[in-house]
Image 1: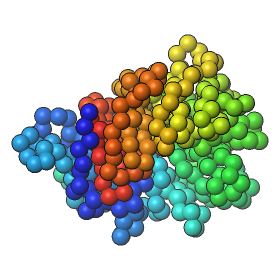
Image 2: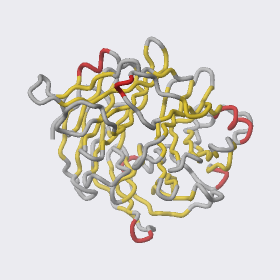
Image 3: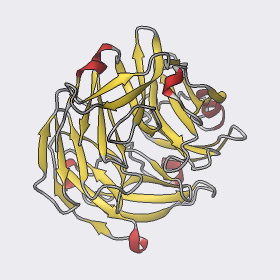
Length: 357
């Protein structure tokens, strides 16, 4: 394992919001597959997306560098807070960006075309459809006029439906999940306290093979993991639960892992398995006491579970490993993403990116 620092990124990356790995052909001669990243940030020119190319050159010093793609800066309507990709494990045809401005209360979904992406062209990402005014839609149809505070978007495999996690921080502090039809641009249904769920704002993800949404809810000092079909009417199924007693039933993150759904608390890590119909209780293991996020593995590439804290990373060999290998970081990550083919993890930090190999 190694954590090479990529200081060149600090010259252009400001308050970063999200990062997503995209495989693409860069035209350079490399001994590893070329990789493009889409990075959301707020810089001197305002909120934007920008492409960055991970270039590997044997014999150079350093041998690899993360280089901004000149001309790829793409302005956004508000600061980006979450990204997802249509058909993320296949054609990767469209990028969906959740942007939100807490001061004005504005929130939109913006859409960008990823087909034929060519960094050599040096062009901004082209819109694939008009932005969706998410705040206006949800205030009118879901919150009774109350403000919205979305923190994460997860999209179905065909790009026709999306789930939006709202942490409730701008209202009553109670999280909600809103499901929106992206074709008709209509609100479909919500998961909330009123529908029987004590939701946790730990995270959501959509299994794009069958458009199944996974989310977490609190239940009797345990954390339940539920699933539901985004094509259905909001009826959910209990997948399993975990005891994360170190934090009294709260969770910091929920993320897809190779064998199930990972749940992370400040000192506890558990894996709720998806095989066998679910319904069981997953035991937790001890992890970093200041754990912040769990590296998502939507392709099932990693056997390990990667826990990210303020200045450390812990690598658990599996869900039973309570003595993980640890590495120090140079700054606090705000997001992370996995490149599934070569198994690189990109940790996005204010002012730079570190790579976990």
